[in-house]
Image (cartoon, rainbow over all chains, first blue to last red; front, side, top):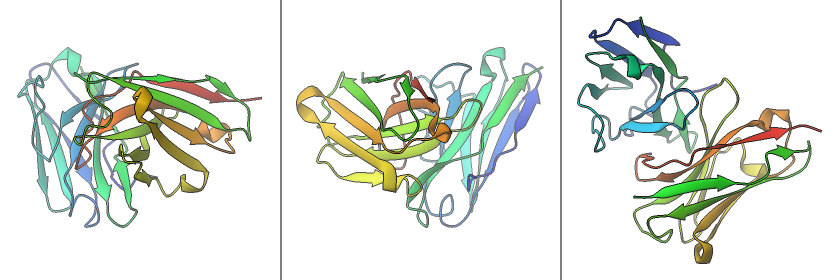
Length: 110
Length: 119
């Protein structure tokens, strides 16, 4: 069972804004940076956000990340059909001495 | 740009050892910029970090797998490997290799390989 909790699903219509939460604790999000990964169906995960709010080259600025205390969020603005995917937050956990992924959120475009 | 490719048997018998290799190209496996990692995903489930290795051989293992796990690096062939012993059906998963940078930034991933544990 993951120590980073995400809602199982989120949805929106094209053009809408969707936000995904990631709830952790002082030993992970509270003391380490958060990354977000996008996994399209049948493919390997892709780095979407690193160091809480940094976008790798090539990731559209529609994707943004933030962190406050022991929680983090991923926002997708101007939702598009190609954004339908599973999204995972991730961070190092000092207590577990392990890198942990969130439970994952499936985003649907209605 | 880095490229990673997993290889190994797709079927392993229960109680045996699962062995996979990841071949790195596009940059040196001895680059100080990267650790090299393994991640797995059981069918229909979420991602689980298995462990990382640095080119010097320093390893970091998931405590839940540590007693069964060995990750090693072969610099001469630009490869790193995973061995997981005493496997059960619970170890059935798609196994990914990836580059790992400080803070958990995994920029580059292999395509993944499905390993099924079954007799």
